[in-house]
Length: 297
Ligand SMILES: NC(=O)c1ccc[n+]([C@@H]2O[C@H](COP(=O)([O-])OP(=O)(O)OC[C@H]3O[C@@H](n4cnc5c(N)ncnc54)[C@H](OP(=O)(O)O)[C@@H]3O)[C@@H](O)[C@H]2O)c1
Image (cartoon, rainbow, N blue to C red; front, side, top):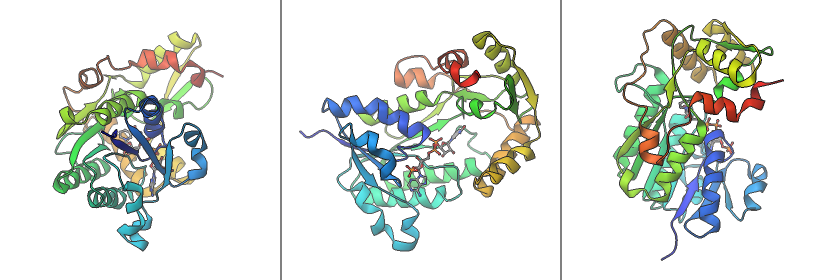
């Protein structure tokens, strides 16, 4: 029997690139056939070097050119990894991906959403839940991944050397390493059956920024301090850097509400990574130790 074909979308992104790294050995040893999709095939030369097929896919083209413009990326694919970026267009992009996957006979779809209460009123969390509902309505086999805040975001919080700037005051958000999200996704994509219809909140631990700066001091051997900032400054900086203002207004609201205590993280989420991937989640200490160089100099 031919191995299943797995399409990884967002393969140049944070989760997608980590996932591809994990699936390349399966591809090279014939356990599955890996195909990746990107808007930027030129950025994917490193994949072709590893004999991975690269398909061009821009989900935004479905709006102007119809579903036919995006269907070819899904042709002959059995399992899909769907991730979208930090943009309100994620709604239409996800719908086009689900519709194209269904039209091309995909059997299972793994979607990256977000960890949130079922009745959340945070707008972009709600978008992810609506995408999940659309996936469920499609009849495709599916697994929902719902990560907490990425530990990798902490790198973006480094302003001046030794200073971590963040916007949630002394609140204690949940954190997850992107590699753990990728590992759970890889586990599901290798053998979707046991995970069909399941939703996995993905988080390792909760920690305040003060606790994280203390850890950083121990790990780097240098003094670190936390500098709390106002959420509107986050919005202004991101929009000035070209990010989608609609999505970034949602993130600003998350920071405001995390800081004032009106946004509570879901309970009972810390065991899922180990249950699915078969090893403990990466702790913040392990993450900082492995990525020490990102926080020094
Ligand atoms: N950051 C966090 O703390 C956090 C927490 C929970 C959930 N999340 C969720 O995680 C997701 C983002 O994951 P990430 O950080 O891995 O994203 P990322 O690095 O920004 O990558 C997003 C990928 O989406 C692809 N993409 C964007 N527009 C596309 C289009 N029009 N057609 C086809 N592909 C398109 C891009 O691929 P190409 O450029 O190669 O085409 C890119 O690789 C979001 O849904 C976010 O809500 C994030």
